[in-house]
Length: 380
Ligand code: GLA
Image 1 (tube, rainbow, N blue to C red):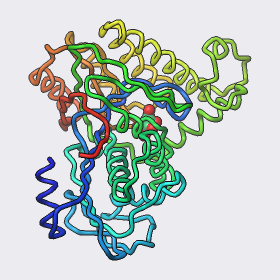
Image 2: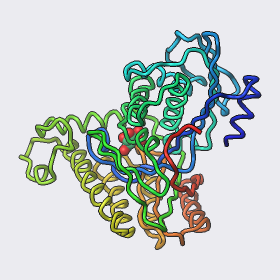
Image 3: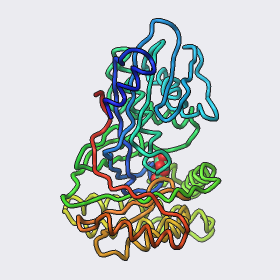
């Protein structure tokens, strides 16, 4: 990837880059929609990344290019407004630049910038967080600063929330920033506090991307966010992380609407499943972890109602396969991808059989990705 990036950069801008940064995508392991509720979540940084190359310029021009697009976006230094259409990918680096002052970070003036990725876009693997993190690292290197990883992660999330306009939690940026090969990232999202947990040997990750996408997915994500906040307030808490399972089980009738009760049950259940998963991972009990993964999906399916017939079919098919420890939707939901944790006996043939059963029912094949864990964002 690095040599392709360098070659592309020189071809486009007529000189080599000064800085190269890389940030990985992530799999949401367990803890669905817990992050913005202040709860814990587990994610895995993967071996697919977004790479950013940058060289400073002497003038007040910024040139943004992406290996995925033909055109170069040229903007004067003072212009930090949201782009649309084909240029909207540039909202990720622009959002990071716009976020920096709020974190006391300086922004570079003129530069040439190129992004290249081996991380599929729209596969639920958070290519957006990866490009934000890689950009943030490149920009700080360009002004000779080396902020903490936590500051970079928070600035990247700020970019996504305030500039791109997605009210996401800290999961995606946190995992891309703090990932470690052969480990999972545990985030206590209220702190936030970041830790790594060793992945027991023999666990394999497979992602099945359905390419289905609910037309209202952004609105539905925001709606779930709102429903969770309303449920917390009705229960006298600021965030659902402060609601104990016993309190939820004994809540007076009429305190919560039926919908709010389901959303709260999902989040409170997920919070305890994340803790149980950490214990089972530390004990090396992959079968127990797998059961928690599938239980998480069932909760998304029935209580949080962010699954779809396509995702349910994949989880049902995978869960019935002996080499699969567990499977669940990964990411925001309402379409997108399913992840499975399997033993090494699950192979390409087994994955293709799952895809073929899916294709027979839904008329299109999901993409299959066999992913390894990878290290978090860094300068290269
Ligand atoms: C998306 C968001 C994350 C998280 C998940 C659901 O991936 O970007 O912050 O809320 O959905 O867990």
